[in-house]
Amino acid sequence: MSIWDDDPTRDAVLIAGRKSGLSFGQIARRLGITRNAAQGRAFRLGLCGSRPTGPRIRRAARPEPILEPTLEPEPAPMPEMKPVAVSNPTRLIDTKPNQCRWLLDGYAEPTVCGADGFPWCPDHYARCYAQSPKRRVA
Ligand SMILES: [Zn+2]
Image 1: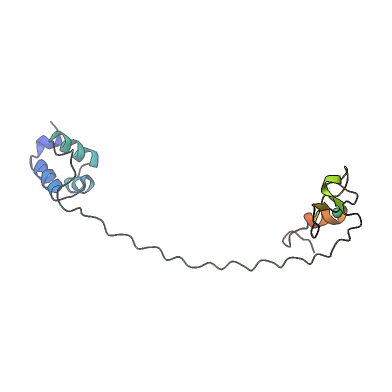
Image 2: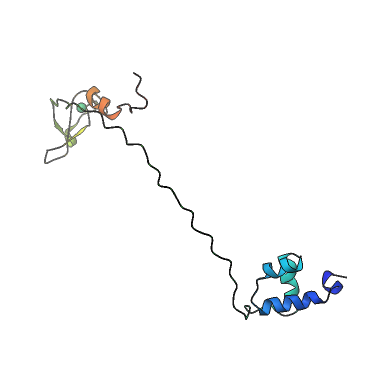
């Protein structure tokens, strides 16, 4: 005995539902059974293998959520950088170990600071590792 044998009108509801374009989930809700049970019965009745013939009934589309624009705080201004005096500009290819490798602008060839310090002299090291305003301790 199955639920299909108990109530023969279920098959009629299933067949009518498929013909009217209802999905298996919608038919199953009407019959009080699972979607898989409705789909299995339809398969055994030979109703599967083709798409429903009726117009497809779709759910109403959900309204798009309205997103409030979020205002991010203004970033803190960059701290003023005092220029570093470069006393020994060196072509990058001519650098020796323990020379600063800070790349300088305004030269035809790649040129670096060349002061003592690897990879940077103390002034350029301070530029590379400047603390962010959040971490700065007053
Ligand atoms: Zn340097």
